[in-house]
Image (cartoon, rainbow, N blue to C red; front, side, top):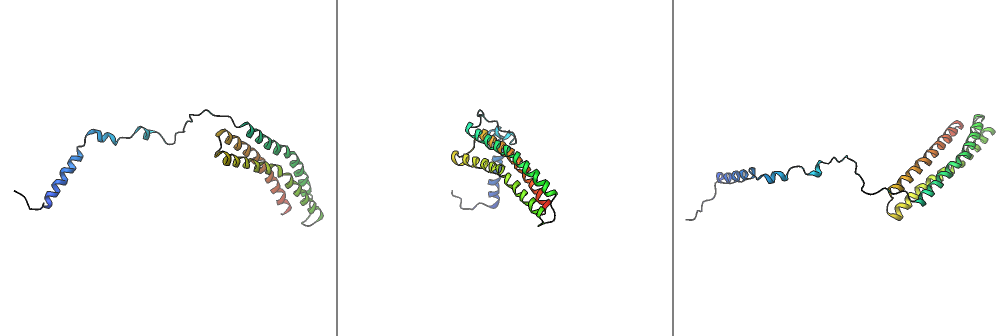
Length: 174
């Protein structure tokens, strides 16, 4: 005999209830699949240990960086002498546009010119880094460390020189 009667709403509710009851009693294998995996137990803040052996910086790059930093430090003597002269003339300078003020301004210009080797070395170090990126598609860790150390060294020298020039300009009112 064929039943032509449609399912009543209570019949649908019973089917859904049986289906949900079947899900609740899932085997223990399914429950284990939801457990944390070993990779999830690793702290993401933990440092990654490199499996590669650290390599020394490229000798040619290291030599070029040493040359640039050496040149910047050698020029520091000339800068210091020019700055000392400008400081003496600035201390003795009269009001703006006076003869002594103009002489102090000229001495200040000489100090700015004496800063050029440090500024140029800093630019050349940046250019070396850019060359490494474009020619090699990246910078090796040791090369990057050498570039950063040279940039920090020359950058500190450049900042000290800039501060001294700023102080002289402030005294001269310009």
